[in-house]
Image 1 (cartoon, rainbow, N blue to C red):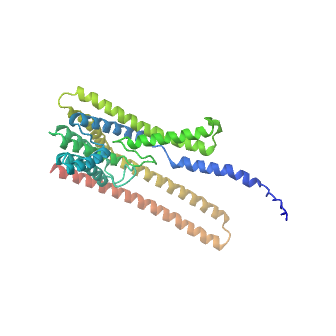
Image 2 (tube, one colour; image 1 turned 180 degrees about the vertical axis):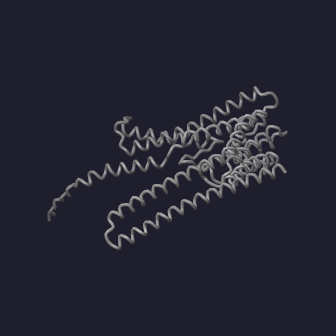
Image 3 (tube, rainbow, N blue to C red; image 1 turned 45 degrees about the vertical axis):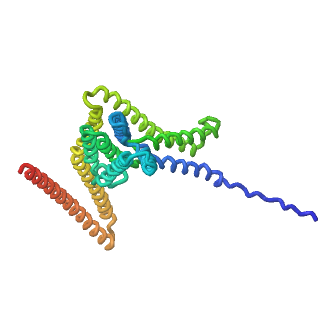
Length: 361
């Protein structure tokens, strides 16, 4: 028997279905662009400078004591080697203790940062003590510059690296690690690979890229700018540390005073300006609140005027009376807000004067 083949009727293509595809691509491209926002320039500069400080400190530590301070991966692998050699009788307990202390010091530095900065994002005017963390980082480096021996000062440098590395955490989708570049180079390579594959599929012609592919290339390009800057400044910091170690008189570890001076000065500057910035932002918020309150008052007054012109029956008159009461209530809210702000300012001045008198006593 022969089978009858029923012709398949193709459904007509509606204009909505053809136009929905470009719309969906535009929406997806917009989502991709929002997935990563490049940090502000001063934030990137801050991270790059800290990466230079870490690269300098790591090179100075190795040249001074033949130990890397920020290489937790290498120290962890050394723990495995030393443990196996200890059981085989090839290594002593000193070498195993050395590797363990370097890892523990880095961990303690990151732990201290978690206590001082309890948010996994940049929030400069909250309860996070960024200034104190930077000053502590500087103190650890200064202490390492004057300590005798090799293992103990290297542990102090490792603790400073752990503190700094934990402080520069996730920001606007970019994972910033300033004391080592293994993850940074990995991200640079994978990002370049994604961009190359997009262009290879389109014959290396940018004009053939659609909205989604352009968005992906743009996001990866912004990531490369951040990551390549981190690697470059880490490298330049190490190069700078080598030359400064040869120029500065005294033991090689005295060159640690240079990155310590930068981080310490930055921390003290932040601590000095933090209260000024908080007062300025409070003033801006008060002005914005008063402006919004003024706009609301004008809108209600305009509505009250309109109601006067439309007043023809009892219900509109009652509504007019209620609107007048609302305006009076807004006046009271404004007065209460001003009194509250004056009281808060007076209390703050009293606290500052009490602190100053206690300090003098």
